Amino acid sequence: MLKTRLLHPEILDTLGRAGHGSQVLIADGNYPFLTGSLPTARKVYLNLMPGLVQVTDVLEALVETIPIEAATVMVPDDEADQPIFTDFRRILPDGLDLTKIHRFPFYDAAKSPATALVIATAEQRIYANLLLTVGVVPPT
Image (cartoon, rainbow, N blue to C red):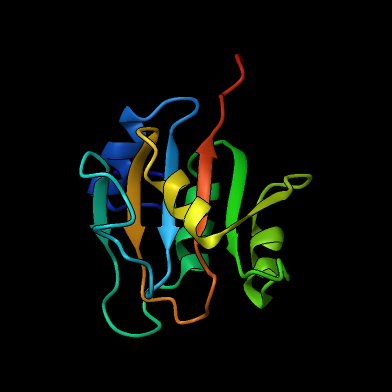
């Protein structure tokens, strides 16, 4: 039995294989899951129906499971903060800033060979895509 709240076997398997510098994309319901990532990235579909599961639900589970070194978000042309960014900042570790990049550069970043895992959600809020970089676990 696992002690972590994250129980999804495919996500746990991929995170266990990912190391420092690997990336995890948590994508909203509008993200092009197949064309917006490389075929080598494992894709896990949690988009049951509109609104279930949300990006923030996945983020809460990941924050408790992996060290997060960086967080990149997609922004519109005016680079304005999106309402969901407040939730991201609340959930992410203290002091971790959001790196903002535009739509097509975000797609390019998500297509990096470093992206090990793409988690499809049914998030309905726009610009709710989050690309996380796995950090290191310090020695005990």
